[in-house]
Length: 161
Image (spheres, helix red, strand yellow):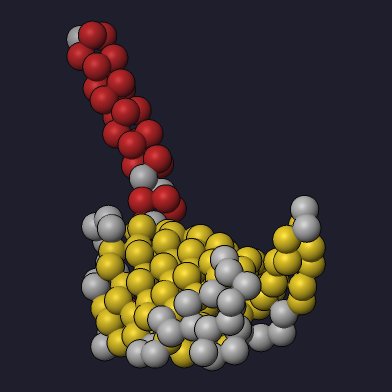
């Protein structure tokens, strides 16, 4: 009888531990958002893990905000501390604030008046509608700006309500 009770208690403890471990992190969903920002301004959001968020696509608009320039080890770095992206898809819309740091990859200007560059950044969701209502989370980003095209990929973890 004691052995059965001990086994039952052990099983219950394992189950409770599993449920506790599945807490807030279990709702996080890894996503990849791929964008073509010039010339088409489109995006595709693809969940990489199972969860409430579904694949979506639509348009994206970007307000890069103000920037400042610094020199690091002799290299010019353009810092955009608060770019605002608005993704509008078939399943709702969401807004992201992003901080990026751009470096030039050539001193030859594109026909659009600025040199090609690459950037990395961090981003965070600040509001949403539809499937993105009350969404939280963020992650990292990579960019390649060649005048036209300008490509971006945002990857990270989002938590639906």
